[in-house]
Amino acid sequence: METVEQASSEHPVRIFEPAEASATDPIALFRQWLDAASKTEPNDPNAMAIATSTLSGHPSVRMVLMKRLDERGFSFYTNAESRKGEELEANPNASLCFHWKTQRRQVRIDGPVEMLSPEDSDEYFHSRSRRSQIGAVASNQSHPLASRQHLEREAEALAARFPEIIPRPDYWRGFVVQPSAIEFWQDGPDRLHDRMLYTRTAGGWTRTRLYP
Image 1 (cartoon, one colour):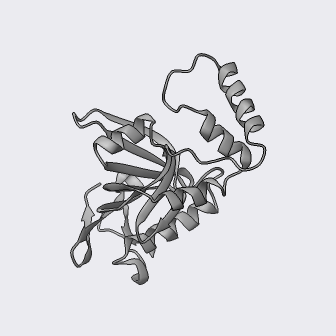
Image 2: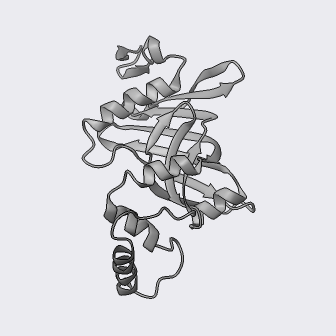
């Protein structure tokens, strides 16, 4: 529930309070926000920035699509031999950020990352369109490419080699970010934004309001 109350000054202060059902459950609240964004975002409300880093602390960030949210966390799929895949192998921790401009909201998530099972990766890989499967196999992601034409020839060769089922390569895997902290940010008037941080504990989640 979001309300606007009149403060002692002439400027209203926006008060952010999650509905009772999600007051102690950030996953339920995230689902509410994602559902709202799916009605207003023109493209990919499930798009998220994922930041990884090397063991020496050099970060990198890029956009991916969240494909599943369940009790395990936020799942996505990628080439495990890409830069992010190699960094996750060396340092299995990541930060996510969802930004919904039409909603004036963002959500940040931190947590360890685990690789999903081969069976899980198989199931999702073969649920994709045939062209997407070919593209995933043809791309030696993050590595140097001689030319666009070379990539297109690789894709054509794969399509001819596998006229029916495209086998999932072992390097194309799913990952799940298991949230240890989730922060919700809501735009407010006069830069008096609302920030609510949920931190996972042994008994569930604690909720802390942060200064904007």
